[in-house]
Amino acid sequence: MIIVCPECSARYLIQTSSVGPSGKKVKCASCKHVWHQEPETEEILIDVQDDPVLDTDEIEENDTDPALISDEEDKEAISVGEDVSIPHSVRPNVDHGTHVDDSTAGVLPAYSVLAAIFIGLLLVVALGQFPAVFTKIIPGMEIIYEKAGIDVTHDEESLMLDRIYIRADEKNAGHYIIEGVILNLAPKSVEVPFVKVQPLDRNGVILGEPIYYQPEQNPIPAESAHDFTLDYQTEERVADFELRFVFEKDQIEKE
Image 1 (cartoon, helix red, strand yellow):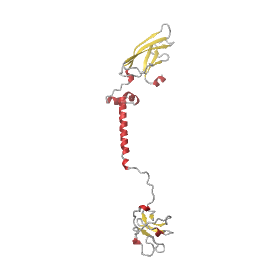
Image 2 (image 1 turned 180 degrees about the horizontal axis):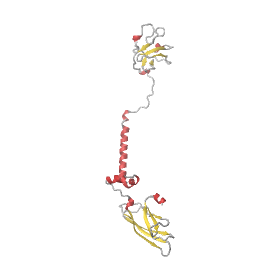
Image 3 (image 1 turned 180 degrees about the vertical axis):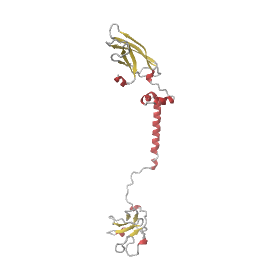
Image 4 (image 1 turned 120 degrees about the horizontal axis):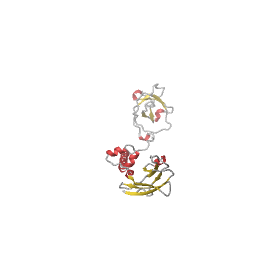
């Protein structure tokens, strides 16, 4: 049987019959701890030709088992010898957990590096292809783009209101007709934001409510002009109209 020192956990292999049905006192040869060894509940048969684990220096020759002696014959517990390898046939069944192949240990870090490189490349491409978008989202990105020599012109900056003409309808008091042209100077199609039309008096003071206009066919083609005509009806004496692009949707709600 295999006994284990409760103090230092040293293991020893002894004959089961040496313990007896009532147990024996045993002293560890490693830490000198003494304990009462109980017999095994289920006996395991082992061929032991020579017991190398006994500390024979502390055992007197007698008719008892050399592994253990009774309390009547020796008041001091005998020592068991040095720890030995436990035979495979008597090893306890220990769950060693899930096996992990060491060959895959370096694979996961490699995949992580490749994924990081791939994400970095995507970010670089996105930053290069959509500078106008990132300069809107991230403050201060224009400085980085300028140092990198990348044009940060926004699409809406290529739009222009031109040839604005306002006239009052002589047959209908308070009715105004506003004509103009939206120019796209960019070499690509551009989405036109809302055009805000605000009436003003002679002193430039705002009168009444503004109206908003956006082309039905949007975006407008590259390097093209889009003519528009608007009607405005009011009881105020309007001296002029202010026309400008409103690029932010929430700005329309605030105004």
